[in-house]
Each structure stands twice: as C-alpha cells, then as structure tokens.
Image (tube, rainbow, N blue to C red):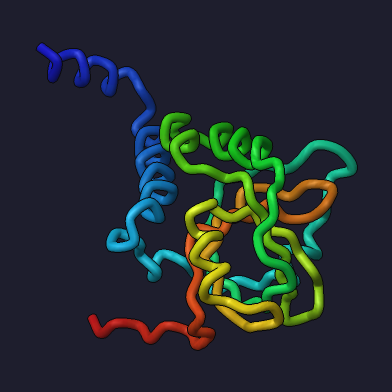
Length: 174
C-alpha cells in the first residue's frame, strides 16, 4: 500500500525536480559523514571570479548550488555569525528542510583568495572545530564549498570540508 502511494505521488511530480532534490540531498548529506565525503564532486573554482560577479543592491541572487574546490589562506578562524539566510537559501533551491536543519551553520571564517580578496564563508560548525585544530592563520589550505548565492556583500559560500593539501587531486584512472 505504501508503495502504491509513493508511485502515485511520484507519477504526478516532475521527475527532473525529484532528481534535483535527490542530487542536492546528497550534496548536503555527504559532509555529515567523513567516510561518505566525495572530494571528486568538487570542481576547481576561482574565488576571485566569484567575488567579481555582479551583486544585487538588495536581497540576493539565489541559484542552483555548485560544488567548488578553492585554495585559500586563512585570515580568521571561525566566529559566530548568523547562518539563517544561508539555510533559507538552501531550502529555497530545494534542499530538504530536515537535512538543512540538522546541520548546524552558525560560524563563519575569513579567507584570502589568490588575488588578495578577503572573503567571509559560512562553515559547518563541526568542520569549523576541526579547522581550528589543523589550520593556522595565514596558512594555505583547500576548502570544499557549496556556492549558493550572491548578495550585496559578495558570494554566499558554505564550507563542507577542508584539506591542508593544496595540490589538485590526481584523477583516478578509468
């Protein structure tokens, strides 16, 4: 009977929407377990290009999130910040609210890009705790971020993971 109900609900829904929700669910859920984190899903990104994007005067341009791998320098360790807008933006693009709500996001770090731009980034609280133990101020490291929006203050980025290794990963043989 439950299977019939699920088939009925799915039959009436746009399958692309369900696929997008599934992909976004994996994007957010993966960082919750270190063994499940898939570094290969993160493409190389350019933080300076993200900073140069056209910014709205008010509000934010929220878009389908993308996963990026960025090499940055730590300017300031995690401090308390208001992550409510980031969480709202994540829910707006279809990440299930229960998944968004189970990941504490109330801290931000400041990083410096290769071009010298100082950029705040939201960071999952658990990841922030490990970052404080492993990365010192002014050290280069790699962040694995979800790029969710651009607001008046710049890009809305969420750090899901980090690595002290700054060399690009070697593609696995196929």
